[in-house]
Amino acid sequence: MTTIRQWHLPAAAPLLPAAERAAFFACLALPPALLHARALAEILIAAIDVLFLWRCVVLRDTAWLRHPFSLAAGAWWVWLALCSLLGTGGLLLGLLAVRLPVLAMALAHWVLADAPRRQRAIWLMLALSAAWIALESWQQYLTGRNIFGQERWPDRALTGPFYKPRAAPALILLMFPVLLPILGRLLNSALLAPKIAACLLTALSAATLVLIGQRMPTALMVLGFAASALLLPRLRLAAGAAGLAAVLLVASLPWTSPEAYYKLVGQTALQLAHFSQSDYGLIFTRALTVAQPHPWIGLGFDAFRRTCSAPWSWHGVGFIGIPTLQQNGGMAACNLHPHNYYLEALDNAGWPGLVLFSAMAATCMVLLGRGLWRSAPPGRAGLFVGVLVALWPIASTSAFTSIPNAGWLFLIIGFGLALAPGNARRASPF
Image 1 (cartoon, rainbow, N blue to C red):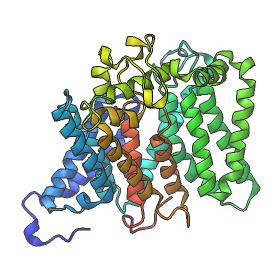
Image 2 (image 1 turned 30 degrees about the vertical axis):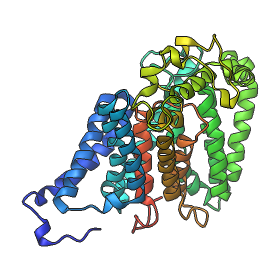
Image 3 (image 1 turned 90 degrees about the vertical axis):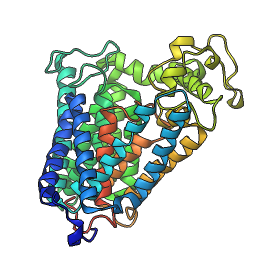
């Protein structure tokens, strides 16, 4: 921690403990807000950021600015802001994107740093959030409605406690940070009963995601369990149980939920066979064509939404073999974002922006994964896998900076950085 000398302490210094407590309680309230009050979540993130920056000014603490994640995220953000200034707009929103990396550093450098009690409390809030999503998904599956009276989505996907199909994207972000510490404790026992419980819990988690009926989170779940099994060899039996449960459940869907089977299996096979003309293929093509005229600086924040309706973007991509087509989707291929973080970075800030965004993601994974191959505490492994599935480049995603998913992601990143070697000095409770 930065050395504090007497001349570093202005009159505001006595307020620092109160500010730290306020930031922690704001962090504690963030998971429920991300679930059901997105405006409140934005307010809480802003409060944590402001308190953290105020504390750094009071203590003249600039050490966090030299943190590798801060450097990587700062480089991406500065370039994004510059491209937004020089491009077609979005400067204000581009500047506000910094709130998320600052949130992660506030948690890693201050709120959760060397604070096992606080770490346990935040993990408990994440666990309660995941349990709430899973419970409401099962209630909706078994009774047809969630606690708010919301029925299944028209394509038969479960919405969990939400009014739209948001259960699976949130659950896949929370699953591994929550599940792996529990499995680690159960599988560490010499008794047979805890090991059986671990297998059952893993199978139940996999079954929940499959029944929700969203394809990308289900695929990312497979990736997550594979990565978890590599990092934690004793988890391989439980991961095998999850895989078996998922396979058996998918095989039973033609009888138990034909609509979910068609979406998970039939529609996936159809879209892969005709990707260029599928909804995702059209959006993928449009995202590349939006980026082509401005390869160095892109078009600024939120470029895809603002420009995908322009006729000049309604063509193919010759260098990857997608020819110019008259029926390339037109306005139907427009959306609020290109459904991929990396394509979004490309459209917003050109190829340099994509490189800087990828460097930020890689830096984050390196920091979270440091030392895991030698010895992987289940808590750290879970946070690493949670961020891995969130930043996986071949995935359909929400907009990178949109709440709630961005809030979950940077909350997990900050938590993981707080436990990373070189930052944590006390033993982790996980």
